[in-house]
Length: 86
Image 1 (cartoon, rainbow, N blue to C red):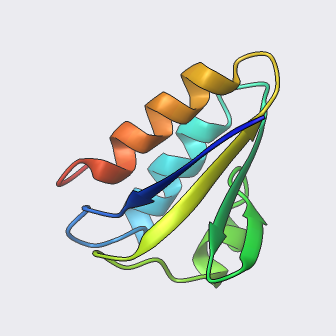
Image 2 (image 1 turned 90 degrees about the vertical axis):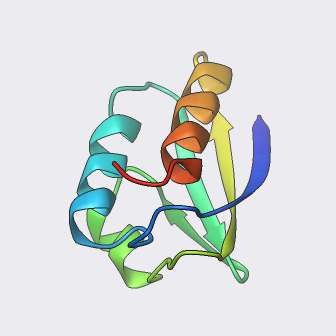
């Protein structure tokens, strides 16, 4: 299991279209993927879970990956979150 805390740099945060793209990317991997914000952990492969925690630009979140492709998954998802736009 690996985890990393990152600051969200997406202009719109993980709302609407960026959230959908994030979930679509997360679902490419076999690893179990989770996202934590303020002590609440959600499945990073669930659009409903992601929308429920309303992640905005400038917030720090923790990504957690556990599985055979955990390192690749974590690196790809961190890249998405830390880019300025999707």
